[in-house]
Image 1 (tube, rainbow, N blue to C red):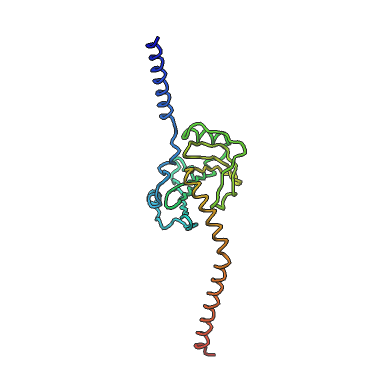
Image 2: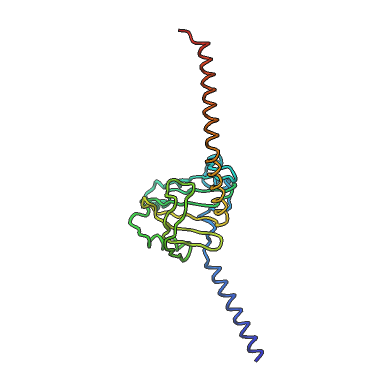
Length: 228
């Protein structure tokens, strides 16, 4: 009896290991899009898209550094090659590390496709999707979209999230991010916006004072040099 029980336990353990191995083999990697991986530095992403790190726009500096870099993948000129389906990718960085990617698809590449078509296309790369009800994704730094957009389908694990949505302009897009850094960046952006609002009156007063000083200096110079 003991031998039988031992064999059953061993068999059960083997089955569990096999199932876990199968899951790991078929699990999709949500930590990257194409050759771009979360955590990459601005310089590394810039090198891949043939841009200079200095091209990254600084949106906020305090309490955390928020930068964005936009890439428009080159479209092939030859009709014999398939068109690049991506119109642009917006890379977002928090303290120099890539934490979010917004991928907008070319309208001509998705013309006629419905939500189910797009879900199947993304699922071929990232596995089975969930269909969240009344779920939205936020865009705290991008005015091209509403503050929130309704999600069509979502792929996620404990670390990463990818959401497919359709913008108000009827354009398909996916936004993917690392949950930990996205949460930290969101808090940092909110604090930065608050600080900017609090400091706005003082900065405006300083700007107005500088303009007045500059105007007076220009006036004095013109008084001395003016020859009617």
